[in-house]
Amino acid sequence: MANIKVMLSAAFKEAYLELVPPFERASGHQVENLWVPSVQMMNRLKGGETVDLVILSAAALEDLRKAGIVSERTDLAKSGIGVAVKAGAPRPDISSGEALKRAVLAAKGIAYSTGPSGIYLIKLFERMGIAEQIKSRVKQVQGVPAGSIVARGEAELAFQQVSELLPVPGIDLVGPLPPDVQEITIFAAGLHAKAPHPDAARALITHLTAPAAASVIRKKGMEPA
Image 1 (cartoon, rainbow, N blue to C red):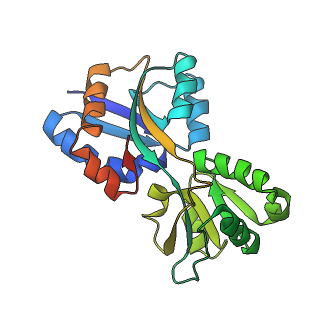
Image 2 (tube, rainbow, N blue to C red):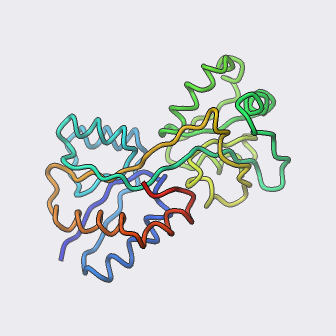
Image 3 (cartoon, helix red, strand yellow):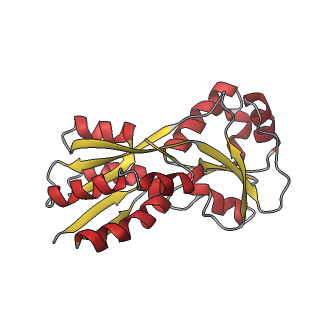
């Protein structure tokens, strides 16, 4: 029986935490989880840290694959970006890109992460022509949910993957970004090229992509890939 070391970002966390215990019971393998923000993960892996499995955005995994760090990639889930406010606060109109732009301009503080959603939002706000106007009100966070900043009253709007906003206490999900400005991110599992336990890691991937996993993934705010 193997001790599988998995390095992963928070977007897939809620579904993953529900899916792993049945795998451990059925297989006899143990899973060790390293929760690392995406930026730090890339630095650690490119710096030579070895694990069995990496779960990250597909785009970042492709970068690791091209660098020879990851040898195989399997898509797990698709995730859209959501918007949240403090629990009980008025919900802004985000029914279109223009409505979202007005809501962001009116907000006293905006929180987003350094992960894929935050990278996209920086470009979106630049494209909308409001990046400079909101610069002083933006809080970009790493290692904590953007929703927690809104729950504490330090910002009015939180943007992050829907799956990362749903479990945060003290906030209300307003909804996903409107279709005309939404960005869907694929999260994928990558087998490390020097994985100590490749067969056990592949067995975990098979479990995470099995038909039975689909309902858990949907329940946690994502769509199976």
